[in-house]
Image (cartoon, rainbow, N blue to C red; front, side):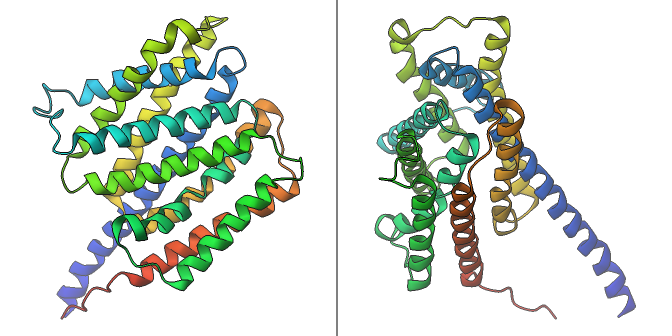
Length: 307
């Protein structure tokens, strides 16, 4: 009996240690994503947002191809569902463009608060698209979450810039992107899906360069443009490492801590401070998202007790 307890304790300590590392990696990923948005907002003051989107894809593709390419991953470009891969890539592209244009006019916290509606949209669309059952509790949480988005945007009151609609369109695009990603998970590898996302953005943007090109006004702007891909690449890498260390149900609530980094960067870099209603709306959206996560954990089967 004593031997069993002594062998179990180190395993529990190691398990807890892995979860803590996973949470730390998750927070590091969110800091990277916050820096990406802050950098995009900064460079948008001197270059066209479409140029920033192109630079983000080029630098991200360069980093991706260093790790994932036909040499390191033979057959990585082969897909069983090409139309779905193209749709997914376009949805990510549309979400990125909407977000970059919205950042030109909105505060970091405002855009992020609207994007927090993405899990609510995914939960709503999982029923008709993936055939998942949606109970009245989830529907109520989704409805309350959308009420929070309305509090943030306040349509018809003239208090929010029309660019808030771009953030909302970006959130819808990103929600569909998540749905399609789940549909592809059963047929294509993550390496294939990642490669298609990188290549598609460059293929869509490069032909437009002669009409949208704005020469960066300083070497710093060049560096910032290229760093957008670095922040995105590092963020997704940390995200993968985090999920390898801890279950998604443990990590998911920490997504909402990104509001802290967006608030800090917005204030330090741009002197922005959201109004009271933005905080109230963000709180409603976050509370709805956390309730959905709670319901999802309740639905998961509990492990059988061991002898």
